[in-house]
Length: 196
Image 1: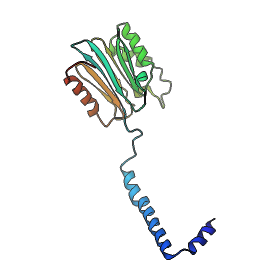
Image 2: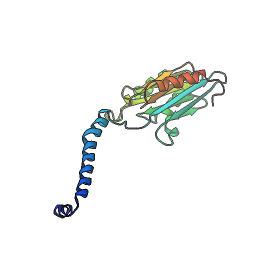
Image 3: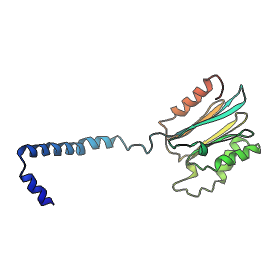
Image 4: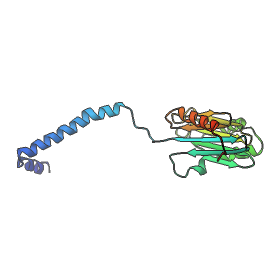
């Protein structure tokens, strides 16, 4: 086949050869100039957006509520957990969906939010520590009085963290930086009106 292509080239005009030289020069320019510059900027993120959630308390009405945003469609059934008689919880990042029901069960027995987080993390057997470690989990719990606790594991995908306010806690991972959760808390705290 190479020979056939070569014969075809031999029969073409000088204009055809000039066009191929321009194309070859453009490809070489892209390979040796443009691509190294693009690669020097660092690898593209694995995901375009991350996860962030907020648990909040309205002191005027006594209501609690939660919201989440995630890159995965229909995430509400795995991140947010609520029980009108106990409180709310969010579990995300290297998620273990079992954390939500466990948190609500412990809240139903009136265990404090910080003790819930400690107990659940301590009891997590961490079955896949190499690639699904409990050290990558994020977890927050709020009782019906607005008392909360939150945890961000040291192996959660960066940027990851949580921020607490007087009436809310926000947590997120794979974010641009701490300003995301900082602004969530600031805006929740200063916004007046009904929780929903």
